[in-house]
Image 1 (cartoon, each protein chain N blue to C red):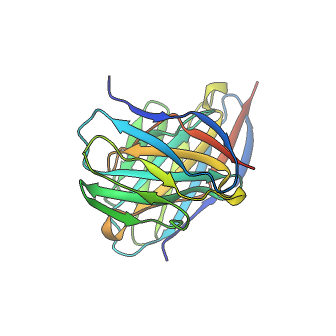
Image 2: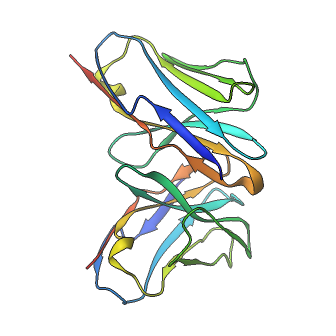
Length: 109
Length: 110
């Protein structure tokens, strides 16, 4: 079954404590991306990757890092989370017909 | 900066009504326009449009793109309560960056 998995699904953390949200896809897609979704602001792209070792900034990259060492995985790293990064995060795979992961609800206190 | 504007922001209709959702855009090096449906979870893909004037259809849903006027519409006929969702429009432009609109929240009542 074609799918995108994300972990964790829910996370409550404190300001400044580094965290990683994992994302994995099984469709052999070259293109993967991360979004955050906030009320009234819609989905905003954080980073995207056209292929292994190729990543680019989206609209809201500040405070985030990504890596793409293998095609199937695209982790999102928050080195020093802050409360304004409290949001719902989606990983997606595929460039046109994007398949979205189930979402990670992150709360930073 | 790429921009996508959707209207209306919110819509309440009765079951059986027909609705039209609007999406206008400004994008550098347009490649495609996409429609997604989001219920209480992740968005799911509906349509991809790349050429003007060619209608895409899936059941009661249809969509068309006007590249000259820079907009797209999504039509839903004979609405059902299961159509209640947020409908998202997105465009791909330079370097395959995606830009989403804020969505139209549709509620279908009995």
